[in-house]
Length: 299
Image 1 (cartoon, rainbow, N blue to C red):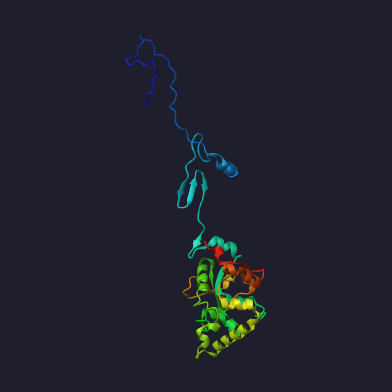
Image 2: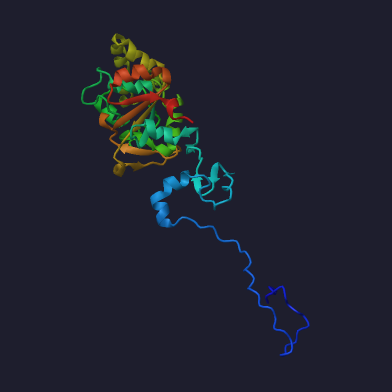
């Protein structure tokens, strides 16, 4: 019920012709009601969004201050313009996925090894094998010299590494890093392994070690390559295997799968080594393969 009453209202007036008519007054103005701030239309935002966001107080009504910025869990909300301040995705071991993708030259999978494996790029390696990463069975069959790699189950007919190259995807690259750094697994040379002096080694294993010893003698003429074999520093290979042909593995290594037959040089997209070894490894493998320090993709 309205209480907007004119200034000449007479509370004793009861009507009748003998009384003067009530004074005529203009209606009182309607009360002031706050108006809803007008907002840009969707069409306007679509065509003028950059200018609108750049204007002072974007998203606030005229005469008001822009909404204060509120930080929540690393995100900054500022008025109608949304600014995200999100840390890069990091997986276990301090691997920065954004950095890894930037430097891995399109690699989808990674193989951890030791520097002895780099002999695959050396001229002493058979031309048909040069530049490839092959499973142990293929290397044994080829009579190749092998200076690194796990040999625990590589000689077993049903062992994963007998016919497959072990790899992990980018989300489990820390497993490849850890493997390459564990000399109890990725030993620097079969010549130095306990099995090389075993009296009960099979003829296959004996031939395997004999090939390595003979190759070590030949490498005496290549001091740089001999140093790579003897130093045994960690090496991470970035690869692009056929993802439709990967073999599942029952393994303690998270995310490990097998690449049947290994990979050729064309599938090796990047090699990661300690920073002080980048130059010598790049010189060995050539410019077609990107070589970088392991630290480049650490957070």
